[in-house]
Amino acid sequence: MLIPALRRFAQFLIVIGGGTAILSALFGLLIGASVLRSIAIGLYLIGSFLLLVGFLFGNRGPVRSKGDDVGGDIFFGLGSRRLRWATREEQEDAINTSAVFVPIGLVLILLGVASDNRHSLF
Image (cartoon, rainbow, N blue to C red; front, side):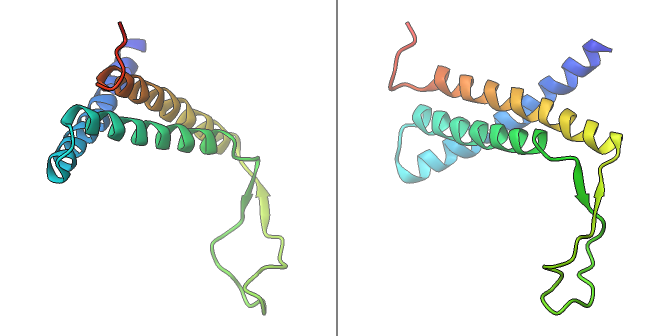
């Protein structure tokens, strides 16, 4: 069970990291910047974004809205309380989604640090 999960994680990391590196390199060439620096900045940005998304998904509260319809309220439902408790599956999904986004974000930031040519690691 662990090997297929690690394989999916690696595939997701390669797609997100590779796509980010390619787009960042192309953008860096377009504006005339250093390719390694552009890749590092792209990895920093996407990694930070994934960390933020993972944090927000993981910290969703146990309350969800009942529906998307606004209803007939005068002020578009601002005063109405159409809330429900999240099911166990919804809470587990929020935690599992966070458990995917946070490590990928951390790995992308570390790859950005490794590829940044402004500072030497050794």
